[in-house]
Image 1 (cartoon, rainbow, N blue to C red):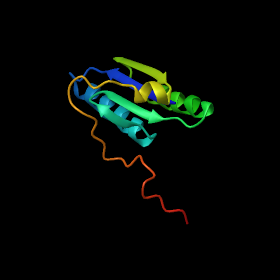
Image 2: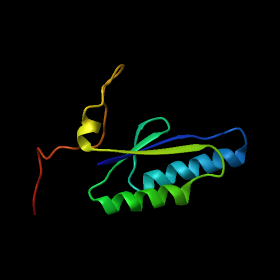
Image 3: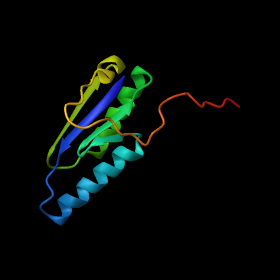
Length: 101
């Protein structure tokens, strides 16, 4: 399962920009990867990990703006259609060269 977090936060004042940066850093610290600007995704291995991830998002939420969370199955996520562009990831997500120690 994947948890997708989408947000639209104001960045007009220095305080709002600071809250934006802190929220973004909290997402990254909690294992979210950026899909595109203001859209982050995290792989969830168990149902309880969704609760943990959601509590982290709620804890880091800024005072203003909009934050949306959507959970989708891995099959639904894999069926995502790229209308323009292509998937580009620096994260190795295959077990092609898996070394078990």
